[in-house]
Amino acid sequence: MRSGLVQELVFEVAEKKTSTLSGRVLILNQSYEPLSVCNVQKAVILLFLQKAELVAERPHRSIRTVSETYPFPSVIRLSHYKRVPFKRIMLSRKNILRRDGHRCQYCGATAPPLTVDHVIPKARGGQDSWENLVTACLSCNNRKRDNTIERAGMMLRSVPRRPSHVSLLVHSVHHVDDNWKPYLFIA
Ligand SMILES: [Zn+2]
Image (cartoon, rainbow, N blue to C red; front, side, top):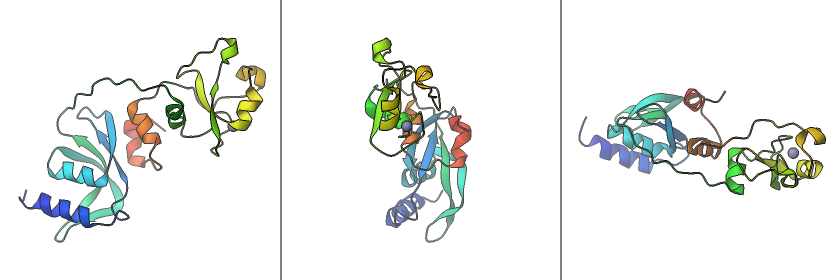
């Protein structure tokens, strides 16, 4: 690789308007497990330093320097396995909303105000847990009150589970590239 290339590229990337280099890139560990999400600039630098390899590119987009054109990254994979210390995700209102994509888990509404509902009500022994807390719009929360979903005649759109760090990250990204889906186990 030409020695000045990284500098040239970093310079070019820095010079580009964010509109042309906007987008998120999924970083896979060497084991192909999803690790995190980064911006295009960071991905390009990792690729050119050969700390990562390109797994999937965005169609119809490219990165141009003065002299060359490069694929626009969508998924990259680290060259070396990165050990990830186990970090417990805090059970919080904010993280419940993020996990659920800021969407009422009963009717699908996204309009605020959104609340957090106990699937099995506290009054019936329901716990504060990932499996028992879901995002609910105000009207669904009022409709359900201290009933179980069966008694309220309601249904959950998905089974609430403990999220992974990557799934929380992905939910904070507005557009998930189709290229990511095989690695994220989402349909
Ligand atoms: Zn609702």
